[in-house]
Amino acid sequence: MGRVNEYVFCLAERAAEIAGTPIKAEWIYCQWAHETGQFTSELMQSNHNLGGLCQVEENDSAQPDGDLYYINFASYEACAEYFGYYLRIYREDGIYEAETLADYVRALKHGGYFGDTMEHYLAGTNMVFEECFSAEKEVTVDD
Image 1 (spheres, rainbow, N blue to C red):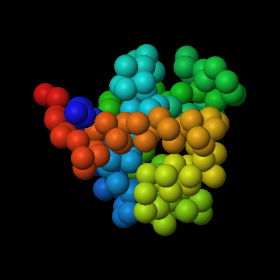
Image 2 (cartoon, helix red, strand yellow):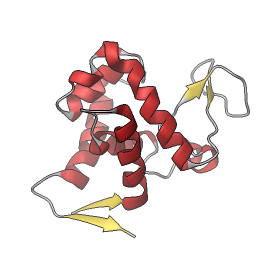
Image 3 (cartoon, helix red, strand yellow):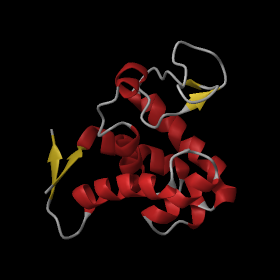
């Protein structure tokens, strides 16, 4: 039985609305769950950063495996709005032709969003999708 964090799912819906069709809130939710270790990472808690989003401007949140710095958002809502607009840069990578979570992740990989292997990243997002959104499983919502 899957458990969905209702608050984070509402944020994913907002990001998907801004990004536009066909981006689905479920895909964004799965991505954020994977990026944040099921919404438990220090980066999420301290920077309101749901997706490991980075910037070139220096701050106190240096990315450990690169020359970039994690964005420190004022709120989760600000992160979700930014993320919706941010996804638009993957248009040339095929994100707007995505029909499945795998297509969505493939477009992100092609655009350089993550350095992980496609197989590992997709396995992580698929695990969340199966747990939370699979039609065969009952979905419950946390308060």
